[in-house]
Image (cartoon, rainbow over all chains, first blue to last red; front, top):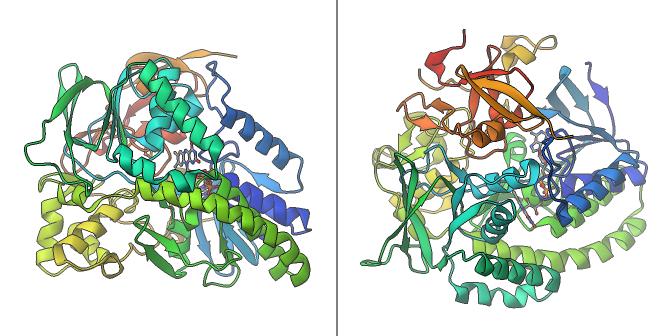
Length: 476
Length: 88
Ligand SMILES: Cc1cc2nc3c(=O)[nH]c(=O)nc-3n(C[C@H](O)[C@H](O)[C@H](O)COP(=O)(O)OP(=O)(O)OC[C@H]3O[C@@H](n4cnc5c(N)ncnc54)[C@H](O)[C@@H]3O)c2cc1C
Ligand code: FES
């Protein structure tokens, strides 16, 4: 496929990207929407990917409505297209079922969503231990629980969502282990008051778990998971409000065959780091976010970010941000006057402020606590690709590594095929703790291509090996 | 239409739902270990299910693939993604 020109390329067809593309297209902007998955919807509105019978959830219906709206719009939706490089002003390289190709457009909206953070603990690399976000994918796309008996642990609203999903899918939940206390949840109530629907849903989840007899341990953390002849043994312990184990606190063990664990969502900044736009560290959510103006413009002309990729604020905010970014593109490309733009944007901004209040409260509930990083044992693996332990990271720190890219060069932490998506946050937090510095000092892994490892056998035609900068392989 | 299909992992015959990705199908079939890590040789399985962590890499028809991003078809012969076990 040769390069094709358009006005706007949107990367990611979740609620943010889909809304952005439809808004811009409705104003006469020729828009191409690129999505890695086989169907639009993103994380919340994920389409089923199985021939098994599955119950229809409210999200499924909303997702179907979103997919129908996209199909009826003038947006050119390209599924199964993995964006692996963005360069120039702006060339977007994709790899799809028909092989490689690229698009060229003066405007680019990045709507690539979020990644999950899991703070390491002994046993987190064992097969059968999956992310909370991973569990939502198993439930939504495949109608299955991660195991027959699952321990659900970590922080934030995904805990209850996953536990209830498992119960509904016919699985057993050994326990829900929440870092937060009921008091911390209660402190969110004012911010949640604007969304009585979601509040009611949360209450319904808790009632459902009580009915199913699922123990809920608040103010507790997963201390370790060990393999046993029949499965996994998960040990949990009480922690204080900073996530530090309480000395003498009674540990409890659960015999399970799966563990779903997650400590919040992190904006996926692969593309924005590659484009070297400015990012800032947000201490409230403990995440790096691209710097954005009110029209979701980055510090690089023609590049916009909508949805979780700019800061994790939930599904309602993502859709509104998408529409605002679509309006900003239409304004910047001359399809709308400033007056027309402002008239439309003002109403959306008011709604966004309300949605963002709720989203920010949830993001705070998901934020990791310093004691979680401090509690990682020296021999626990932090970088799963290269099996780099906390002790190895701190040896490098003691020898002078102050920043994650130095750490990567010295220890290979972040150099493997995941490119630091899994370990980057923990490595940066550990360096900051070791040097008593801050996350601005420990920094972010530099973005590079390919954004995802590429199966070289699929890259026929347009490229030779020499055209691709590949990350060094893991040691054999 | 619900449809069961046969496939195999390291030569062991298994069945799964067509349309599932390989990571979900293998998990459903009780196969959790998909590969060993290259440096420490520890057992690993699918972790993120969203194409991010690369823990689910397996060999399919002689090519390395993300199990969580590859759709199950009848007759697929999947092999553990441990680098030393290069598929034959
Ligand atoms: C697993 C998971 C479950 C969640 N569940 C909920 C929930 O139940 N309720 C809730 O309010 N919030 C939930 N969240 C938060 C949720 O992400 C947001 O509410 C909302 O989905 C954000 O929308 P988005 O469009 O920004 O991103 P997403 O919905 O994540 O969509 C991003 C899209 O970009 C695509 N993409 C990414 N990189 C590339 C690339 N390189 N090339 C091509 N396509 C790419 C992805 O495939 C995806 O479809 C969840 C988050 C995750 C990660
Ligand atoms: S499970 Fe993480 S990439 Fe497949």
